[in-house]
Image (cartoon, rainbow, N blue to C red):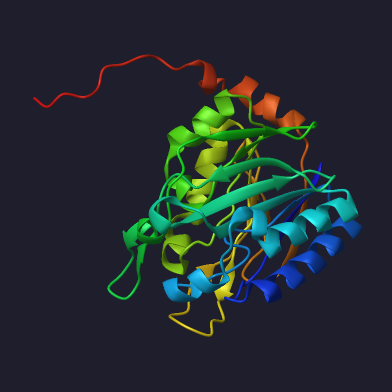
Length: 278
């Protein structure tokens, strides 16, 4: 399987972002990709809730989703839309939703980001994702024929039990589309991705946003980049650096069973009591 990781710098203009991604998907397929992966919030990177309300849509009305479904169909490729920011969350909030599109242009699976990024990275960099987005509550595994794929999004990376549950359910590949903070990315990104691959014996494919995001309103964001592909043994197969572009990686799915045979930790769970203070 040849996977393509699209590394982009989405603006707060969904129409511009759609045109860019459609061209990149075509280029990736021309280079032999059979699975194309985009980052988190492919459609729009914005910190301005008012602007978000103007440019986000309900799922069935979203132009980015419709356009990328058509693109997947046109090129006959599996397409992971890392996530789209959409209307339709509880209490008037949005959802951060990942889509897996099959080669016929149909939605094969959706996943709503479970873990909300509510952190204060520094005195000047604070995020409160739960104030604008409704968290999901369901882990999702999708079968694409050659492999089973576990869906996660960005901050989910810090919760190993989610990835372990996907692996125990049969995942060969775990996707981690992201818009990672530059500060936390430099400190933790590679380490966490390699850890999740090693713990699960899965390929980990993480397409990422990168650079300074152009916005017409509100505060801009800086994301880390470094889209990574990691083997089930924890080796880095590809690192996209910080430039926008397409990173191709060939996945030998036999490596999943090899890694799990060498370290069969997924079979070694034991029931234990919760810790007690003494």
